[in-house]
Image (tube, rainbow, N blue to C red; front, side, top):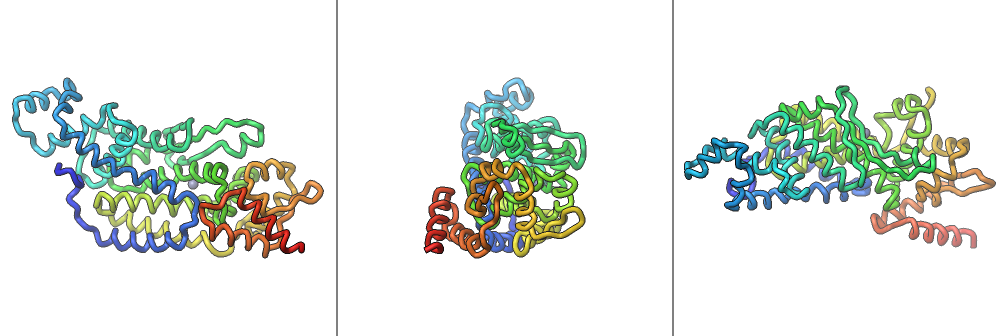
Length: 383
Ligand SMILES: [Zn+2]
C-alpha cells in the first residue's frame, strides 16, 4: 500500500472512451436535476486517502486485537506479512466502527470495487454488512429517516419517498425507503458485474429527485417533465400509467443517466477496468435513456398516445386534488392559471419563455425569482 491508489493504475481504453462519450452527453444535459448534488456527494470518496494514512499509524494494530490472533502475533513478533495478510489487516481495521461516516462510505465503495476487480474476497457476511451500511450512510445524506429494505424477490428494487401521497393526506412524514434485492448484493459479492451498484444509485437518485424538486424548487424542462410524470405515476392507477410508460417516464431516464455516470466515474477514479459485459450494457442503457430525455415526450394511457403536457393538463382539469398538487410543486404555479377553481396551462410561448429563463439562470433560479419573472413578462404583455 503506497498511499495513492490501491489498484495498479492500469488504464482501460474502453472505459476511457465510453466515459468521454458519456461526459460530452452529460454536458449537453447539465440541467438534469441533481447531477451536481449526487456527484458532489460521491466525489467525497477521496477520503480513501485519509483512510490509507490512518492505516499507517502504529496504534491501529490494537483495533483488531483478538480478532485475528495469529496475524496479531506475527505482527508483534515483527514477522513480515504477505500481501494477502496486509489485506486482511486492512479489512479488519476498516470493518471497525472507529471510522467516521465519510470514511466508512469510502470503505464501502472501495470494498465493492475491490470485489469487482477481483482483488480481494471478503467474508460474505462482512461484505453484506459493509454494503448495507454504505447504502444507509448515503441515504442519510438526504433524509433523516432512511429505510433500507433487503428483499428476497429478485426484481424488487425501488426507491420511494412518501412525498405526494402523504402530503395529500395531510401528513408530513417523509420516510425514504430503498428496497434492494438480496440477489443484487450477492451479485456484487461475486464481483462479476458492477450493475447492482448502478441499481442502487438509480434508486438513490429517486430520493434526491423528489427532495430537489420540492426543497430547492429546481425548475427547467427536465424538472417540469419529472413533476408531471411523478404526479401522474402517483395519482393514476399504477398499471395504467407508470407501468405502461416505464421506458419513457422522465424520472426513470434521469435516474438511469445519472447512476451510470456515477458508476463510471467511480471506476475511473480507482482505475478499475470495466468488464466487457458491463460496458456493453451501460452504453446501451445510457444511450437509450439519454435519447428519451429530449424531444417530444409521448406517453400511453388506456391504449392511446398523448403528449405528456396534454395528458397532464387533462389530469389537472379532472382531478379534485389540483390545488394540493400546485401547493406541493410550486413550480407549477408559473405554468398554470386558475380560472374558477380550474387550472389551465398558460400559452405555449409564455411557458417556453419561462423555461428559457430557468435554463439560463440554472441553479440560481428559484421559485421567488420565477414568480417575479412571471409577473414581469405577463405585465409586459398586458401593457
Ligand atoms: Zn427507477
